[in-house]
Image (cartoon, rainbow, N blue to C red; front, side, top):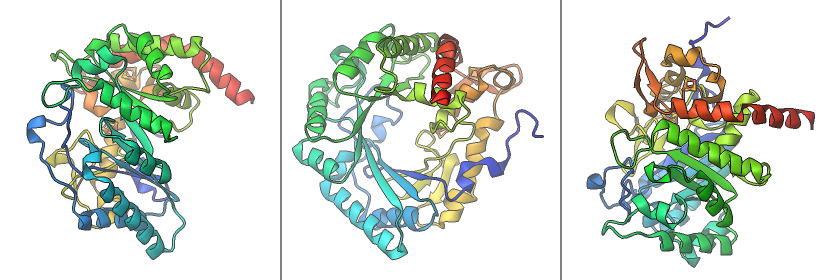
Length: 381
Ligand code: SF4
Ligand code: SF4
């Protein structure tokens, strides 16, 4: 039997070539028309450019031809990926079709795009609809919350432009979800934010805590926990379970039921979504685009990039670096210590604990009986 706290390399998901394969691609790097205070890309390093056609083709071939998965997801990300232009995505789809043909494969390819929404017009919306793109739209909440830290380069708020973009998605029937940061300005506003997103038509909500201790925009652990408790109470109180999806609750429930949750931060092993930058460099994770986590170039062999190189090792460190506090925690199988990026609190054993731990504990304690209720209901179906 495996001792607690040990996870072996062969448990890294990237060693299993048939598993659904995801790749994040950043066609314009960090270039963006917004200059959000909490962005993890420094605006001073923003450079304008676009991935070359050769690299785009190589990326699509690499991801399609060199793995055995039946399902491949490609997430276009930024910066603001709409700056690549419609023709870029038309080419990307052509290369995907070419690669499938060359392989003689029936693999299912899905495309998603994460955007601030300000550039979406009818043309973009109809392109997304026609090509089944899932759009993730960054929307922090009602006007005052959205405009608190999401300003453009000139310091102007763009809430109305984002809502206009969202309107085009809705009018064209584009499938979308919302991504909302939970920052210092959101403190105590969970109910408002949930109600706003729901009224805006969002049925799939993701909440991303801004962990930036010492910065005016960073939320502390307990305020984050209370915010998520308020969201849960709204979701539960409105009988929204099964109609509106909050990623964190879905994933927590799946983990509670010992099923695969599908969110890297709450999985025992991560590293499922490597990222290709505009210049073709491939990194283990969007949040660790550093020389230390460089896997290579998209022109390298797929095996060395994704399956038997640094990536599986990166993934298992999420579990093997856990502090004792997590290994002994009753909630371990719900959050698995959270994202390594947020592990910044020193502990007695020399390992780092997640900054959000107190918030997670507050939430998990609050929803424990509901998790059991939902789990019993699902198992009884
Ligand atoms: S480091 Fe964090 S964001 Fe990156 S893959 Fe792991 S859990 Fe996910
Ligand atoms: S709740 Fe805290 S102590 Fe428990 S596993 Fe999660 S991060 Fe670790």
